[in-house]
Amino acid sequence: MRTNCRQGHGHGMRQRHGMALPMVIVVLLVLSASFAGGVALARGERALDDAGKSTVLAQTYAETGLQRVTADRAALGLTGQPGASDSVRVTFSGGYYDVTTTRLRPASGATIPALYYLRSHAVVSRSGVAGAPSAEYTVTALATWLNATMTVQSALTGYNGTDKAGAAGAISGVDECGATATLPAVAVPTTAADGGPGYDGSLAPLAGGPPLVQSIGATPAAAAAASPIDWPAIYNGTAITADFTSDWQGNGFPTTAWFTANPTAFPVIFVSNGPPNGGNEFVLNYFGRGMLIVQDDIRLNGNTAGWDGILLVGGRIRTNGSNRVSGASVAGLNTQLGVTPLPSDINDLNGTKAFLYNSCNVSAATAALGSMRVYRNTWTNNFKTY
Image: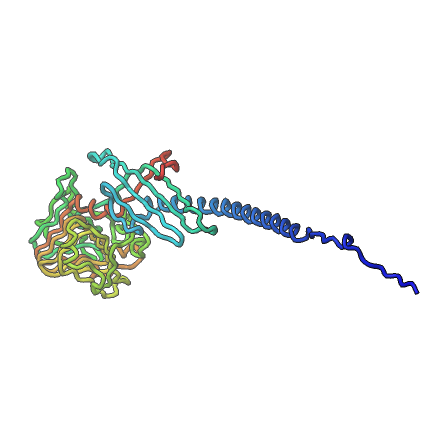
């Protein structure tokens, strides 16, 4: 019997190496590189877009700083005319801006004002891309300082009339500061709120003019209507930003210690004691300075009460003792509000009084209300930042 057996041959069983894994690795590398490139490209585009937005935001804040230092210095904590240099930093979410005022030239007399260099530098540090640099922008301008002014009609102006008991004291329109201009001692309506003469008292304490007694209208209403003072806006607190706000009892009023510690300060003080004829008379018992705005009546009480600067009073001025005011005093302004004055709404001066015109104190009291005026064609945005 023949048996056929098929035997395999060793050379028919050769092992062959596969290519799948290397190809997969190559594909993954290519895909990873493509993905990384796409991420880098997207990040770059995001960085460019973010940088553009941050630069625009930095420019906006820099412009804001420049505008505020010219029109809103008080809100920045800067009061009065700037000195040789001042600087303030304002922070916001994601950055800040620095506003610097540098005096290039001091004032020369009354005709050549001081020259200032204004610089506002903004930094925006927030960014949507990690590691991106802060955006910075700087704008500059040249400016001068414009002092606020007040038209003063007399040493003591009473739109409802003024009564002076006795001949003691002095009411003088002769400028204590030495200027050649001389004002009337008092300015009043022809007929006071009580039906009597606008000024009822001895002429002995009066100096200045001519005339000593200036008639500024036939009646209190006519006199108040011709006033150069915008009392409605001041009364409502919209025309002047006060440094101090006090109620009729003196809460919030600067103390004698404050005036002693700040011997050159002439603050703006607003006393809220309205409404007119409400009976909330504000009593001043010591000496102070600045621009004192009183919504209704004020009483200068005792021999230590007095003021350097400006008194703007809605109601009447009442005095007891030996009082002294050096600057300019105006009362009866509530008549501008359409309030019919009472017979008792006239200024009532008793004792030894001194109401003296002083142009230097008037200027000091209005200095805080001045403002910067930017010269045209001096704005730049090419200030180098190091």
